Image: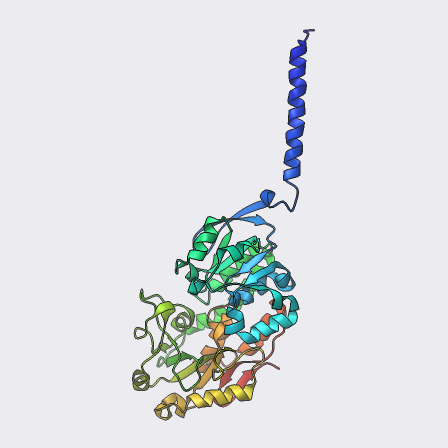
Length: 396
C-alpha cells in the first residue's frame, strides 16, 4: 500500500478542520430569526417591479392606512401584531373604521404614525427606525416621485405596491399578492374568490339590460350641502379610477365623464352644467371625515336618521328642486370606500339596485357586506353604509 507523506496528512487534517469551522459558521448564520439568512421569495408587485422579500414578514409598515381593509382581510386576528407603522389616512378619512379597528385591537392606538407620502412628508429615517420587513404602498404614490420613497428604496427596504384603480379587480389582485408575501395564500384566495362571486353575476347582467341608459351624478359628500365636493372624471391622461371606474362598468352615463379632469380624476363639476344635464340619479359618497363636520357621515357608527337628514340637505341646493332625481327621490348615499377597496362588490350591487330597481330587486348589498365581515374581517359589521331619500340600508 502506498504511504502518504507526513506533510500531506497534515494538509488533509487542516482541510477537514477548515471545512468544519466553515460549516459551523454557516449553520450559525442560517439560524431562524437572523435577518441576513431569511428565506427569500421574489414576487412581481402591482407596479410591475420584482421585489425580494424575506420570510416570514413580521414587521409591516402600511403607508396608506386606508388599506387596513385589505390587510385585515388577509391577516385577520394577526393584523395588529404585525403592524408597526402606518399613516393617518384611516384616522382622518374613515374615522369610524379607525375606531372599530382600535376597539378590536387596542394596541393600534399606539402604533407609530408616519408622514403623508402625497405631501412628500415621509421621513425615510423614521420608517427605517421601525426595522420593517415590508413597506406597503399604493401605485399612485409611486407616481408622485416622493424623495422619501426614493431614500427607502436606496436603503434596501422591501417595498410592495398594491393597486386599486379598477375597484372590481385590483383589490382582489392586491389581497392575493399580500397573501403570498404574508404566508396567507389560502385565506387571501378564499376572500378574493368570494368577492369575485359577488361581482360576476351583477356585471354579467349589465350586458342584458335594455332601454334608456340612466344618467348618474356622483359627488364626494365631504363638505356637506353648502359646498360642492369632488366628482369623478378622469386624470389629465384620460385615465379613470375609483368611482369613475365603477360607473364605467355599470350600464349608466356618468355625466362627469369627458367633462371633469384633475389629479386622480377628481374635480368639481360646474353647477350650471349639472343642472342642464338633469341626471336621473344622484349619489353622494360618505364616511366619517373628522375635519369636515357637515359631511355625509356613513360607516360603522353612523346613524340612519342623521345620514338621511344630511342627504335631504343636499336637495336644498340652489336649483336642485328642479332636478328629476330630487323630484322622484332618487338621491342616495353610499360609503366612499366601496369605490376603491375589497368591499367594491357592495358598490356594484347597490348602484345597480338604484339604477335598475326592478332588474336587481333580489340583491341585498347590506347582507353581502355583513357576510364579508363575518367570513373575512376581524371586526364586526355595524352602522349605516347606504342611505336613500326615503329610507336606508343599515346595520344593527
